[in-house]
Image 1 (cartoon, rainbow, N blue to C red):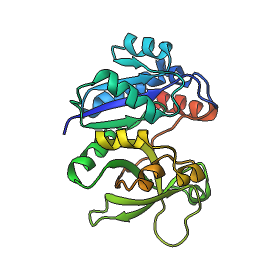
Image 2: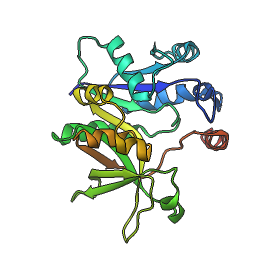
Image 3: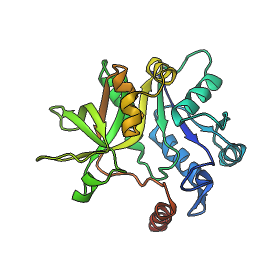
Image 4: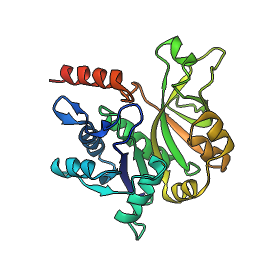
Length: 245
């Protein structure tokens, strides 16, 4: 298995324009994500950038970036474009899609999605999930949940469904976090397919993979990464950076 980590990023975020270059403790957010990915040690890392400013910031920090069409519809499409530019001969057979707005993602979470693909031959797509920390999270439609068939090890699961709806009953509710590992053929097939009915209904693109018949597995992580989607999240990330000094 030969993985590559690709980080999609663009400046035109709806709720926080310019967020890849948002300063967090003196470091652009995209550079923080890049460094965490490099620390995971699973393979080479590159940023799939939608804007030249992002390429400049990454290269200034000593990283690698590929400029992609800014009008691509999703991060998945952006990483496919970058993959074709970086690896037209198909050397890399696993692609880790790491979102560019999780500046303190733990390197072991990145490594976990690669390990799942290696351990589970039936797995087309791997991801991560964390147990709810607050009962209010299970009713929050902004937090996707995983309906999961847990394995005996208690640390991995086969994902049966993803939803924004409330999940009832006893037991933990698993919250999904968007770090993905794709087998290359699965990524190509996924991006070639149109958005699926369930994907459009729930606004969760991983449901397209399930509707295509792909197998998704999830690894349990112990701590939810800070995801920066709005100005309040950015302030929380900046406060966290101050604790690391």
